[in-house]
Image (tube, rainbow, N blue to C red):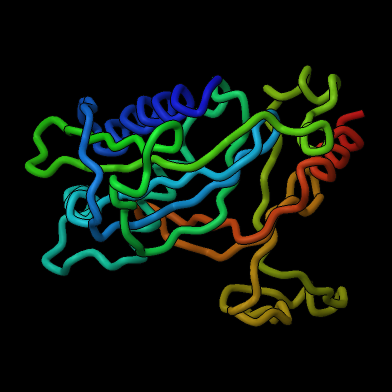
Length: 248
């Protein structure tokens, strides 16, 4: 898959995800690239391709979408908008992209001016129109990807055994902390009891699969539910080895 084909595929998949989030039909059309205030979510391409991809969500459309999903007299905060943008991209199906995308950052920024991007490196601007919504969502996709070298491909490739078991559901657990209690304290537990986990609220929580830590992050609220924004992950190779060892 070429870079242009990949960006178009991402644009199509992003349109589908945005429509699903808004619970409305959505379509996309070519947009324009100009310097505008935006929320920029950056990803690194691994496992098959190597490089970086950036999604720049123009501020006014992104804020309008957040406000429509959670009506409130108070304008949405930057954190709420970044959370929605990140959630939308995290919902993209990667199976047809020929690679895996890993979150690098989500920050307020600007779209890149058209005159600085020409030829094969030109960004792909799209305008996502949502049925029943007054404001469209403008997104500019940019970045550079290329086939992985033998070294990066060997680091990102999954083993044949893991390919066979990729559709198996595994239990995911978020661990806020852990401690040990004497049996006497356990038997005395009741409603209103407080257990000190010996963990600062600022420390990252751990994400475990089959009792193995695969990532660390911070607790966030997603559509009124608890969620975890991943800040650090173990390497794909180590994750694959851990899962294969657990399922062997």
